[in-house]
Length: 400
Ligand SMILES: Nc1ncnc2c1ncn2[C@@H]1O[C@H](COP(=O)(O)OP(=O)(O)OP(=O)(O)O)[C@@H](O)[C@H]1O
Ligand SMILES: [Mg+2]
Image (cartoon, rainbow, N blue to C red):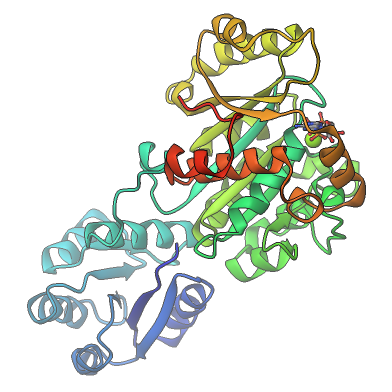
């Protein structure tokens, strides 16, 4: 979420107001404009603070709170009201909505539910415009999750994940994080020469008290602007990371970052599948040789059996032009029975040099052809369109 929502809250009870305030303060997307402990003063507070959203906690006095919501709905019709109560029964919800609340959350408020409610309120106010990016086509317009999955080992996933993440991070409007989900053998930290203080294992171990502040502290920032959440250092810690942990972590990161790049393992683990399900785009990386293309066919077959998956998958051919014997592109498209979305040229010297130096291509060889291709891919995924991307370099772009 890039836009900040200015919020005013009213809750006469310290014991429920404090956790709600702390939850709101942990969000990048929120500016806590005003906090009030008396229902009767809140109309004045709203008048003076002019918030985008008000949160009314009902439990100190339901009658007064509902009356306040009615007043707010009349005087500040354009400011949505989010009602919060420990009583989540149908009757209480109905009363709050009838009084004029737009959303209702049960206390204690869970971070994800708060984020979703705020997102809905923002969308309903028309603040979120439709995007022309790939994410826009899947219905999420404020963030994009990109999974990178390989059709065999060594096909170039980590190289793509790191350099795509760095390319996306160059746009000042973006806030990009890379999550290394190759839990056993991932090497995104090595590719960026980062020594992390925390990893996904720390996040998983603290999942019950996870909040935005803790999560953000667990990512380490590369000088390019890209943030990294690395794979566990100890292999035995892999078992600590379950699908529901990952679901929560991705959900929270999505609220803080405009782009999440997920470097998956090649083992189709439950965490890989969770990541793919949550993604807006799945870049399936292949090379122009038989094993890789055959695996693309198998993976497309398996993944497409799940609703909503097939359209998200984009085939990226890496190392195009690496050897004489490679399968022609037209033949590859015929084999996999779908168009190739992007091609990245073979650029061994730059890729290998950058990896060995522990720096992205942007630092090592900013003008090399692989970097230009990946910059074009980042632009296209961000909805800048093929035209802009095409101008950046000739030859190696394929747009479908
Ligand atoms: N476009 C390219 N041109 C030349 N070499 C490349 C290209 N992309 C990747 N490579 C090289 O291929 C090797 C494997 O790349 P990388 O580690 O990114 O693949 P991977 O799919 O993540 O591998 P793994 O299965 O180990 O996770 C590296 O040495 C990298 O430098
Ligand atoms: Mg890898």
